[in-house]
Every structure is written in structure tokens, then in C-alpha cells.
Length: 537
Image 1 (spheres, rainbow, N blue to C red):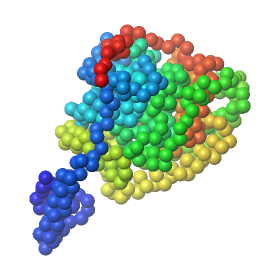
Image 2 (cartoon, one colour):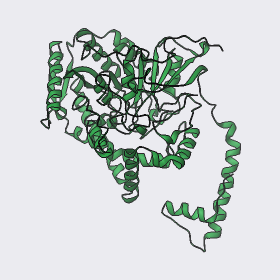
Image 3 (tube, one colour):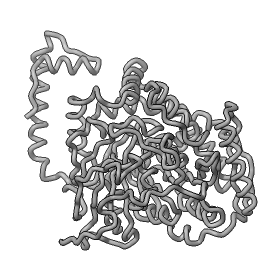
Image 4 (cartoon, helix red, strand yellow):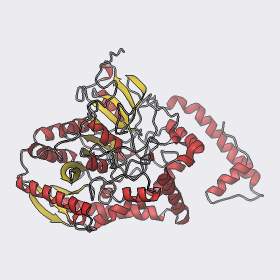
């Protein structure tokens, strides 16, 4: 039953900028109590109307924490074994594939942390659509992967479970926030992982760890059941070591899902497997546009100069393989590095104040997530990662002092950036640029929070633009500098994700990935990854 006293009601009124006088107090309170009684009636009678808990019938082993023996890179929060019972498997697309999911994607029965304490004790009862589709396609979910705290940052160093270590050099960052999802791909028992990307969080670790990472076209893959920052920037996508696994993963998870407001306009069915299978051996007839705004600036540092030289070498190889290379300019691209802050710090604040799900949209709201966030904030809000708390505090200040106008201006600028990209993409088959300005930065545990976070965010200079515009962007390990991988990013027209995978497949066949001698961790895997568990209906 909803209950309150006069003082609580007055305090709530003042928090939203209004009040009531002493003369109004009695009627004001009586009216509010009458409305609360109607809400009590609604809560009682609406229970039968709620949709059922949506979890795939599956065998679920969920309580095996990773150790340094099974997880030397600190890439995994917990090992699990979740696989659908035979009658719930609808296809064999991912039969035998072992999947790692970033630990903010809901899997029924598996504790979710987002690498911070506010989710302590939260065990989702529903499978996110991505998890559901993977299980129905025959995959086994074997790991929940480590990440930046609250998935906010570019280094994967601030989370509750400690920093992820780069497979090529443990003293370097994996990139973030999906760092664990990138690093875990070097384990013998993990084939495909999924990360989330609001400003580069799939593509940055893909670049620094030398794997493939796809930020799909906005809305192509349903985002329900995943911790959100901002609906218009939210993306979830696969990270893999091969283009075949990427095509299989996208074929399994892409498509319309009821209840996701991001998909209100509908999404097409894309021929991922057909595009992968028919990828040619050369780039004859393909035109790539090198984005000048992404390659013309250098601070003169050896790291930046080496990265630019590595990218130019890749461009030369594309030409040798038959591609036509042209230089293009999109001046609007330069807002990308900062648009994430203009659009998202207020969203961080409002996401917290609305307990994770937000308001003003029609679709499937998660009651259990709101409860978990609300209770967690009350108990552990002061223990959230410092960078996230600073962002939320600034967002609330902007919202209340400037009345949401910073967010409004950011959103109002996006159509012009999107149109500029659309115009450029009308002249080329894909736009290419380095995914990150340099190879992986060294981790500096002794540095201040400020220095660590600013350094990590400084790598996301080119990636956030595509979160704003919604274009698909794929990072592939097609360059190297000083023995470290450097991603080359392909950006395509909306809903041409399959074409980007085909371009990457052509490169994979012709040149392979760089560096060629990848590190291996054959003994690092889930205790369930190589076993078969009998399941029953």
C-alpha cells in the first residue's frame, strides 16, 4: 500500500520545483491520497495482465567464480554453463559455440553486477533477447565477462573486479568498457563474446586486443535486458576472432523483438551468412573513403605516428587487393569525440533517477531491474565508480541549472552529423579510419582517477560519432605497430552490417589478422567449456 505523510509529500513537491501553501495543505494531501488509493487498486487488479517471466527452458550452472588459473587476464567475472533443453533449441546455427556475455546482460539465474555494488544480490529471472536467441540457436553461455565499472570509461580498469589485462601485454589496457569480452576470446574455451557500445566500448577493446568488434546499426540487435545509459546511443554486438563467427553471431541475434522501443521503426532481415559465404577474394570494384578528419591530426608522439603509419600500410594493402581509395572529408565528424558527453552525462543522471529504465516510452519495462537499482543506490550509491559518480553529478547539475538544454542541443545536432555521413556514404562503399588513435596504452595503477579516466576517454575520439548517427561500424585487426594490434574501422550505410562483415572476410582471406602470431591461453577456460551436460525436459 502506498503511504506517506504531509512532510514527505511536500518534500517531493519541492524536489520537482513546486510546493503547496498551508491553505492548500489539507486538500492537496487528500487529493494525493485519493490518487494513491486508485494506484493501489490498479496494482492489485493489473497483476494478471503482466507478461510472464521470459526465460528459456535451460540447464543453468551459475556459481563458479573465475580464478587466476582459469582466467589469467582477469577477463571473466564468473564461469557459468547455461544451455537450452533440447525442446527449446530452435536451430543449430550456433551449435557447440561457447559464448561470453558482458556482465550487464541479463541471463536468468545468473547474478548480474555491471562491475559495481549497486547490483549486489541481483539475479535476473529473465533472459535478455540476445541471450534467449543465443540459447535457442544451440549456443552455450560459458562466461560473464569483466568490464569497466557501470560500463563507463575506456580502459576497463575501474570495475569492482579489477582491471582486465591485455592478452598481448598484461601491462597494457584492454580498452573498454567491454575489455573482458575482448580478452576472453584468447581463451581456449570461449568462441564468441558480446559487448555493449555507447561510445566505442566494443570497438576500442577490439582494436587494442586484436579481435573483431561490430557495433551494429542502431536497433538492429535488441537491447532489452541490458543495463542502459541512453536509448539513442545503446548498442550490443559481437566480438570474435573470425568473420565466420561474427556472421553466425549476427545471424542468430539480429532482428525485431517485441518491447524494445529502439526498434519502433522496424528492422530488416539481413543476409549475414550469404554475405560471408560470397565474399570475394579481392576488393575489385570496391571504393573505400579514408576519412581525413580521423587521420590528419597528430600530436607528434611516437605512438601516434606509428599508428598512422600502420594505418597507411593497411590502406596500401587494400589498394593492392584491388580497392579504389579516395579521401573524403566530413567536418561534422569532429563533434564525435565530445558529443558523447553532451548527450550522455544528463542521461546518466536521469537513468539513475529513473532506476535504470527511464520513462516516456512504450515497451517492455523491467520491474525487477528498477527494484534492484533503487535498492542498490540506497545501499551502495556512494561506492559506484568515481568517474560514473562524477558524470552523474554533472548531468544532474546540467539538467537542473540549464533545464535540459545541453542534452537538447546535443540531440538536435545529430541529424546534421547523420546526414553528412549519409552523403559521404553515397559516394563510397564504406568509410575507413583507425579505430583508436594509438595502440593499447599502458595501465598506470598509481595514477589518479582523473588521469586514468581522461587518458582512457581520449582514445574515443572517432568512435562516438557512430553511436550518435547509428551507422554500423566494425573494427578489424588489420594493422599493427610495434608488435601490437591496431584496429581499422569500417563504417557503412545503415543496415549494411552484412556488407562490412563481407569486406572483413575478404581481408581475412587475403591478408589475415595482425599481428599474425597471436598469444594463446590454452589452459584458461570454463570448467564447463569442454564438457557436455545431459539435460532433461
